[in-house]
Image 1 (spheres, rainbow, N blue to C red):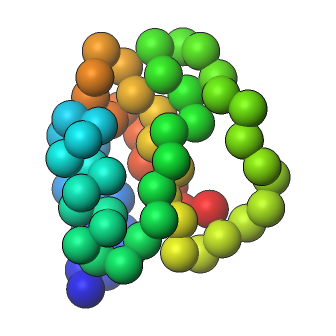
Image 2 (tube, helix red, strand yellow):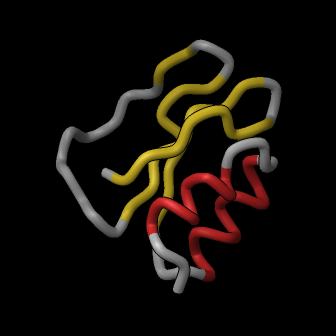
Length: 66
């Protein structure tokens, strides 16, 4: 499994589909929190096994653990 920071850096610029796949392969759950400036309703629980994505035009622009 990749280190968290390496994984997060790798996700930037990937398509949403590829990012979800890479997270799953590395044992992380994932979700999109903002897409094209529109925030989604999400839970506020903190999980260290989940990656949150912000998507613009189909590409990951920001990724963090939580």
